[in-house]
Structure formats: structure tokens, C-alpha cells
Image (cartoon, rainbow, N blue to C red; front, top):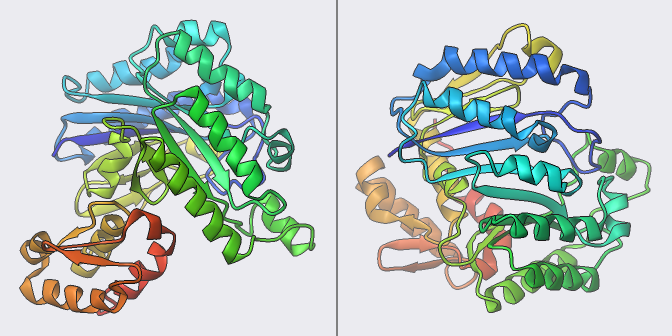
Length: 372
């Protein structure tokens, strides 16, 4: 299968209250980081076995802090090192308040054909709590501006499960998204990490995680409203109109090789998983990697994890081919503990129905092989 290419742009004007991603608020380092990323791209092109690229993704951080020309220069550089003739999707994550008319005009001169817009909510109070730098109106305007410019593959992010904001706020957010007619929606339950602003607020007793009942209610609301509106709930957190699944993210779940460029980026070539987590000021002097070589058990567990997050689930014939008939039979037997509650087993496949995917992590963990 063809490979993927990922560029991590770690810079942010403002750090969101929930964010635990690799990021940097010192915008003075942007230029030197771009130069370092181009050097890394040259140095690591041979990491991939298959140099045919299917998808390219600019994530962050905030890729829209770069001029569209700078994003295109990464694509042009990659074309000298890889075969981009069959690239079907080039995505860039963007913040709504960066989407000015001038920015969109410059963006149209690039090869980027899919925009991932970090909306998170249309509720201004919720946005302030999350320390976002846009308003709900600005988010809606950004979508419309992109659509008016001819973009027909737009995905919006939304966060649910926020203390103090229940189903009424979420219902309004869903209605706003549906009225905008975007092709893809990613809906993430708020996770509170200790190193984030929300984590520190929890320590001080100023914030808390929502009750399990609220999580379940909001997850069900999202699933029902979006699937009734014609979106396919194809992965735990992702919904798409027919033909608009995220091809790049889907490749991760299918075990496709990919090369990540930039501090905070991960790479995988089938045998080795590698990542660079240096502070930006160190990365510009040269990238240092950490890596792990996957054992048979590692690969098996990753297959369990990625497959059960997807609507297609696990193909037992493929498990038998990759890991042996005995392991496939064991997996089927262990999965029957969850049959009728969270798991369906039929036609040689094990899957979690989309409306039950909120419990997928617990099922996945229970099915992991812990043998050494």
C-alpha cells in the first residue's frame, strides 16, 4: 500500500486549555523550524519502503500560522523525493480566525484540497473556557469563506463532554454544523490531561470531568443526530458523508507506512515506530529520535486497537493469516464475552457497533495479548 506524509507545525498563538499536543508559543522560531523541517525531509526520505505517497497532512499546532506558500513549498520539496502522482488528499489543519479573505485567496494557489477547521464549539462561553482565540460567529464565517472559494472537502472538529455545558449546548453546535453543510465532522470527548490548564484547574477544584452518564448521553446525541443527517459513523470520533472519510487518518488505522516531519511527529515503516519530541529550540539544531521495534505481540495489539475503533472491525481471516489460526480462534472466543453488549460477531468479523463505540477502549484493553 502507498505511504502517507505528515508535517507537524508545532506553533500556536495561544495554548488551548485542553491541549496536550507537542506545541510552542514562541513564534520567533517559525522560520528556523521550517528550515530544519526541510533538512529533516531530505535526510529521512529513505525511511519509507514505498515512496509512492497517497496522502499528505499538515497538523499541529497551527499550520495556518504559516503562509500558504510555505505549506506548498513542503509539497514541492516532497515531490523531488517521492512519487506524488497518485496523491488523492492533502489536508491542512487551520484555526477559524486565520481564515481571512486574503489567506484563502493565497491558499487557492496551493495543492491543498482538504481543510480541517478547529471549531470545537460555536458557543462563545465554551470557547473562552477552552482558551480558543475565535468566536462561534468567526468559525461559521470561516467555513462559509472556504466554501465560497470552492473548497468542497471541509472537516470541522467539535469537543463534547465539557463540565458546565450539557446536551443543550451540544444540540445547538450540531445544528450549526449541519446547517453549514461540511463533509466531515470529528467529535472528541474532552480528555483532561494533568499537564494542561484544565488539569491544573482540576487540581485546584475549579473544574472536573463530566459524569459517565453525561458522556453517554452526549455521545448518543451526536451519533443519532449525525447518522440521521446522512453521516457515516465510521470511527469512534469520526463522521463522514459518503465518499468523504479522512483518507490520511484512515491509513493510520490500517497500518500503512507514514513519514512524520517535525518535532512532535511520529513515523512508522512497518517494523519501526519512531518519534521526535524535542523542544523546538533544540530541534532546529538537529533532530534526535526515539524509536521502538514492534514485536509480534505489539503488532497484534495494534491491530486490535486500530481495527475495533473502525466500523469494519476485525477480519478473523486476516488475523489468521498474519498471526496464526490459533490466535484468531482465541480472539474470537475472548470476544464472545462482550457479545450482545458491545461486540458483534458475524461473517468472520468482530466489530463494535458505532453507537457502542464509547466503550471501545475498555473492550480493546480486555482483548490485548499481554504475553511476552
